[in-house]
Length: 229
Image (cartoon, rainbow, N blue to C red; front, side, top):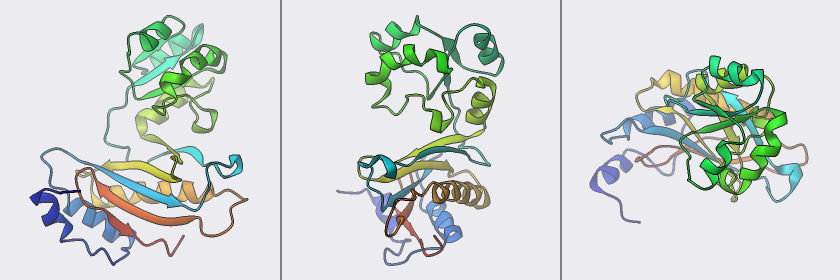
């Protein structure tokens, strides 16, 4: 893959043979970001899990102490008094059956997270083929299937992110923006890693966290030491 001049200049600052401590990796990820927009800083965690086995699936959610720096649009599927509750809590969109054709047929996807009350999952289930591949299906483990829609919306708006294994057993998560301070990014990363360490499947043999790489949207990858994990 051919990279541009800016990327190559940034890549020279990173020693690919070194596994950096978290604070140093965060500083480098910030330093090597040079796009004209406020890049997202992401972490990529390769695990020793085999997601094909149900007992080695990892999925959950955590509220980052300093948020993600992104304005998150929340869609809530609810009925009855939960509609007013969701609206009062700051949901961007609230509805029920009437949203199905809008999403299915019109391709409307102007939202980032979907929350549903348990009694609406029958309705939401019909959108599985659309929402599933995009990682938007509500899930009890992520706290997005709940009767407490106020808490769910507040957490999401405050910087709650979901983590899960992809098909190659890697977890990809945003931990903030390049404009964040090093301290804010470090706090966010530590909070996420603590949650993932706690989510280690009891059936897993061998090393859990194989590698951790930090990178800004357009920047080079910075390897993080996994020794303490």
